[in-house]
Length: 534
Image 1 (cartoon, rainbow, N blue to C red):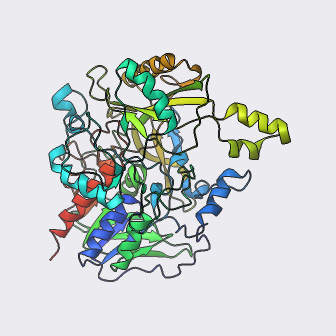
Image 2 (cartoon, helix red, strand yellow):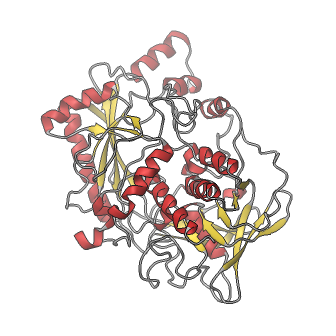
Image 3 (spheres, rainbow, N blue to C red):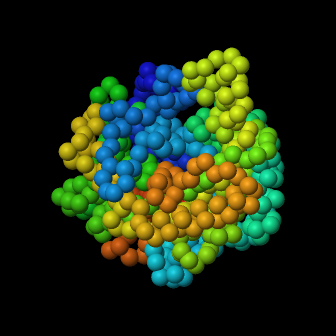
């Protein structure tokens, strides 16, 4: 449960702050911890609450009908609109609160491949990053240590690395062994999945005990959440203010520096937080919204938007999947996260979109949830559950969506939230090239299913696909201030003390879950700010 009664009462500004960070998700929390540990005076303004209650109570809210959602998303505070060819269900995949979306993420943490940083140079599509994989490689290693990544160096298609993972990989599941039989015959390589959850005790947290409910709640605390970096930041002297909704940033007369973050608290008071440096770390949608809400005479199209591209190039990862019944027991205890995948087809040139194939630890609908929602009882229910669970198998895939200017985030000035501010509008569609990559993923999945003898019961893709809720690309980095928002250090081209952290700076998204790259860039950003400190 959260402190929705607003138990934290002192939400007044911090005097003489060196750094003000907006957002207490993984990007903001990592930057805050690094800077506070170096001696900087840091304040973090978080729009949502602290979730300090028993995680098992939150899990009960998820599985029992009528108890509401665990993370309190939705309602007037979180209004949004969607336009474009495809409806974008924004609130289905984000959390406002201390810890951010890591509170309910699945915890898969892969490095982007080298090709992802050089997509335009290699294939003539998308964009090149202003930094290379080599530039980010040491920060990837540091990020794996910070998050406590469990993994094995067994992926022949992964980019080069110089060290082992901090924790040993989770062993393959039983259903992985079933897939392995078919994949060996089809010459498809399987390898382990790096995971930000403890395979053994680490950083004061227990090892995974197999609740299998990673999304939306890990009751054991084995899965990394950004709360751990928030706690470390606070121990080092940072101040984290919850329920502090930043509504605009103000700049000086010259328009070259931010001078205040203006925020509203639950008591209706409005405050101005001053600082020397400002870091936006509130996600690929809210970063854009805040910049656009901060429009001024000097920046009529939004703060840091002299390029006109703030909000443009919104990218997602699209899901392709396939599953059905296998004529033998899958014997699958629900793990809750993937233990095997393949990057074998990631760097294929046709279609150019990257794709990552996943072997899902899925044995059928959850018997617990089904039982709680069932209309039958006793032996009839037991038979029904036994028939549905432990007899199924499934594959998934993430597919890259290339950056396009006509996928964008903007303000809907016709719709306002509970404070009267325009809400974000997500304009999104799936293009034919992405559908071709989804079809390719389905083609490979079908070959594996056929080899196993699976009676396929459902398919996702290419036309009925959905997003993975990875918001990327809306404040892209680049060397040219006319076509990008931040430089290679994640600092605004327009304002010398404004930095943007998170996946909104990605010029391309690849097909790898983005959080490890977010963490690596955040460590690098913190180092850059440290270099500016007296």
